[in-house]
Image (cartoon, rainbow, N blue to C red; front, side, top):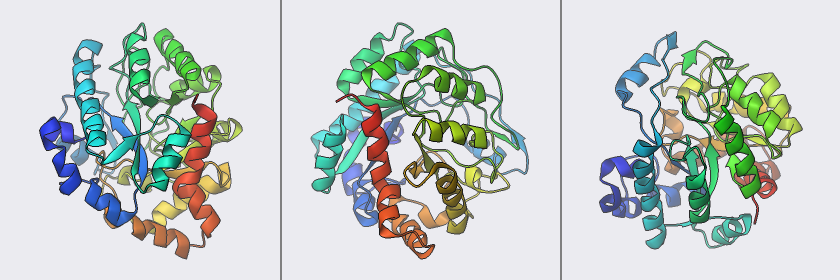
Length: 336
């Protein structure tokens, strides 16, 4: 949540009145946005402008950032989560802990927020922090972002490349997956390399979910899913959320916003054909990447919905892609 970088709790009022960035209450109402994964991400000490600049090139291979230890990550994570609960106290959204929570919140036209960790640096090796965060409302996590930690090794930003780069989960990571299964915390495979993905597939007894990933056969980026990974997701009855990040949409892998909505539809069509229409949704990655100009913020989501309808997606499929499929996979994952 970028409010943490803009002033923390003192800036939550701007979420209600409008702020720079892709998501606030004003833009959400304009775009018909009613829910999603609100990611807690611990920034790496890396020059973001350098990273984006490198990813506009024809070829790139960004090294994995250094690991961030638990003692450093936890205070930042707590500060970000405090912002989320302050927004809930201001009646801007509802932090949802069950599918029934989401359904009730949707019925009130209020934003349903799922507390998600993008990288588990804020969790200690004994998983004590995991227990506390679960009680606070954590219902989804990615074991790694694109950097190593005590649980595994993230996939680097590399183009062109397949995701088969480096080792997978550690012993701590395997224990994390099993405990998440027991608690009913969804495990997100989006930032895992191939070895880590297959470790989750072999260790988890819940559906495999990539909250924000695209098709490697269309865009051969290390962050995208290969056909064999898609097959595993289908066989587990999981799902994939379409990533809006330009570099993972464009065939040339460049992080440039000049991406036609037709390219997003190409990925959606492929995912629907490969996984079935019950296992695909919208994942975005707002405030985390350069996205196509036509969907710069959540206020622009009607542009994508119109393109999907014009492309031939009927009402039943639209409902599935926009929210019903997420409710289905969360119901199979969470423990109420």
